[in-house]
Structure formats: structure tokens, C-alpha cells
Amino acid sequence: MKKQLGVRNCMYPMPTVLAGSNIDGKPNYCTVAYVGILDNSIISISLSKTRYTGAGIKQNGTFSVNYPPTSLVERADWCGIVSGRNEDKSAVFENFYGTLKTAPMIRECRLNMECRLERIIEFPGHDVFAGEIVETWCDEDCLSGAGVDFGKIDPMLFSSGGERGYWRLGERFADPFSAGKNFKP
Amino acid sequence: MKKQLGVRNCMYPMPTVLAGSNIDGKPNYCTVAYVGILDNSIISISLSKTRYTGAGIKQNGTFSVNYPPTSLVERADWCGIVSGRNEDKSAVFENFYGTLKTAPMIRECRLNMECRLERIIEFPGHDVFAGEIVETWCDEDCLSGAGVDFGKIDPMLFSSGGERGYWRLGERFADPFSAGKNFKP
Image (cartoon, rainbow over all chains, first blue to last red; front, top):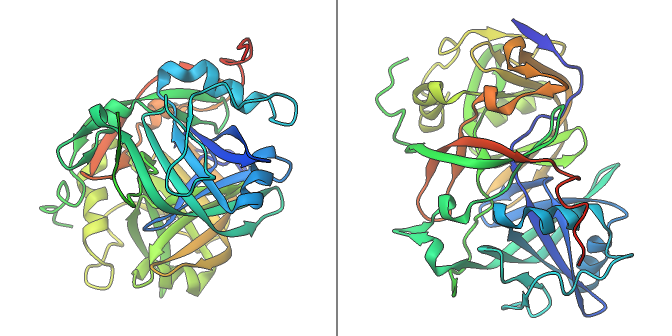
């Protein structure tokens, strides 16, 4: 039996990422689960208009997306509770820089993407930062075969839609563009 | 040791959804993992410009997002392999309509959202359809306590970033906005 829940955003689970930007030359990170894929190499993070990280993205036109493993849950969650306006987050992780030079990344995160700001799309509550990926970084031991092994990345998945939760990724169970190829309608 | 992978979109895992629209009054569905959250009640699906479902969204200004459970992997994957231009997908699932009347939803999916098209954001390869959620539907036995229990929704998660895969959701392991509250930097 279907139940109507009213207007409830259930586009979950989403990967929980740490978005990074430099503000006045210093790294800052915030926890984001309002993320998305817009085009093949363009991703999005949506930040409440008051977020400190957003100011840094506007300063440099660059940002990073970092995947904390579940073992970093305490620090990753803290970065979503506390604002960089009030707390210095530049020494919470080991920072590194890549191609763009101004998008700080987190060494302890197993997967990182550095992005050039492609555009900002405004909505009533959030600015959507569309980022063109310019380089992807991954811990060598999280690669297998053709690419990134998300089982080894061990991402923190976020859900809301009522009660919020962090979830682990389960097992890989099927092949896309293959599992359905023998189906007959 | 970090390895550079070049430009590789790793914004995964993402929920695999079936996007629904009516085309000439008939339901059509396609499989999408290029999804996102833009604002509190505004979500996105990105469709290659040639997708048949996109034409239906433009016709009616409405669409739906449906969550196939892992047990529907064969049919759900098939909807991403085959175009509605060539195959009639209107009888693959049991359809139902809600508030908007023109956004077909799938009874066998445990979670459904019907959306009013808020805007289309154009990118080189994809049109991003921003949808304002107007109603959320959930199977009663997938609710627990305050809301939707994603463990019971049993979503199909999609990853790429090299090798593509469908994954199960794992266990819930921590509370957002709480796990980090005692962290001291």
C-alpha cells in the first residue's frame, strides 16, 4: 500500500563528500550530501548561501570533492556541524594541492576530484556550484582492474527522507547495461 | 600513494532511478544515475539530449523518479539499454498517477517522487531537468519511525569511475550531525 508523504526529498542515498576551497589562501572543508552529476565530466555540490566554503569557491573559481572513508566519520561529520567562519579547519586533515593549485584536497580521503567552477546556478535556498573535473586522484590500493573500486573507497552514504543516517556501501551485485539485456517485455 | 586518473567522473555511488514521463499520453521510463539534489525540494536528473523521456518531460512539464529495488534489476537495467522510441515501455510495470496526473509512476518501485519541471539547465552532452517535488509516495512497509527506511527500499546504487557496477546499500552505521559533535580539532 502506497502512502503519501507530502513534499519529501528522498533523492538518497547520496555520497557524503567533503567539499574543499581555499579562503584567503587557507584550506577549508565542509560536509555535503546535496551533490549530483550534471554532465559527463561536470558534477555539482549545493551549498546553503551562507556557507563559508562557497565564498572560497567564488574567490578562486575552483573547489575539490573528497571522499572520507567511514573510519573518518567523526571528523567528516564535524566539518558539517561547524563553520569555517568560527573554527579553523585547515589542520584537521593533511592537505595537498594538484593541477589547479587553489583547490585543497585531503590526503586521508581515498578519492579526490579537483574542479574548475563552470557556473553557479541559483536556487532559493542553495547555490549550486557546477564543477568541471580537471583531475581525479585515487589511492593506489583502491584501484582494481579498470578503475576505482568503491568497495575499497568505503564511502559514507547519507540518507534523509525522515530520519537521517550514514550508511555503508554493500556488495556489488550486477553489471549495468548487461543485467537487463535478455529481458523481454 | 595517490595516483592521478585524469578527468574521471567518480561522483558515485548514485541511486539508480527510473525517470518517468508521458509521451503522447503514454508512460515511458528510462534508467538514470546522473541525478542530484539542487535545493531542499528540488532534485535533478540529467538526460542525454536524445533521450525519449526528455521529450515527454518537455511535453507535460512533469516527471517522476522511481526507485527500483534490487530484485527489479533486470527490468530496470533493460529500461536503460532500450529507447522508448523503439520499444513500448508502458506495460513493463504497473503504472499509477498522483497529484500531477501526467507523471507516470511505477507501483513495483517502493519509493516514488512526482515533480513539476522547475527549469532545464543545458550542458554540452546533457539536459539537466530540475524538478520541484510535489508529492512523495512510499510503500507503507518501507517506513519506520520518522520516515523512509532506505534499508527496506533496497535501492540499486550505481558506480562508474572505471568499471561500472550495481551495488546494494550496506548497514546504517552513524548519525549525521551527531557523530562529530565531540570532535576537537
